[in-house]
Length: 249
Image (cartoon, rainbow, N blue to C red; front, top):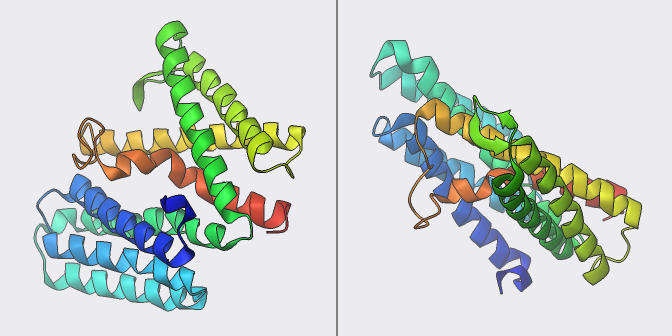
């Protein structure tokens, strides 16, 4: 149902998802410390979505200038442990770049003439990638992909994920995006498969650094909202530029 909502309703949903994801991200890295800064960062980060909806990208520069100044002063005058200031302030700033900028691509993507279809294509490709990577890895996985970051992932599973992503894009091409050629569908599928799995690995890196299994517990049995976004965060920017400049969106 949400996929067929108008851009304004869709943007409200993305704003809420971004806000909750930033709360999880900040809590994952800072725990119970700097609660005010954590909530303020989530609110400011989520405000990027309305700016993108109303095509006010010119305001992003002063917004992030203000972010640097505000949080620098907050950490200067609300001093807790001076030897941890650079880590904690850095974590807040990382969240405000990582999540709003990457997830924010959803809004200009949705505003493209075929934006809804490209979003569906991305979701299908990433879900297919995740499912195939899991089943192939469980059945045939022997060689570790990157054990330092994600011990359970295998090279065989990663290859299975790439195949799944390509199949997902081909399904989207045959179903609702016929303008994509077969060769282009394969390239897009491989690109999404690679970027999706890199996004997953990057979130695993952050979680291992924070010594947590999941980013949160908002989705019972599946961790937090941020856990559900990891692959998509790297995929949506890529598909936006493919759709915008490759297909004249």
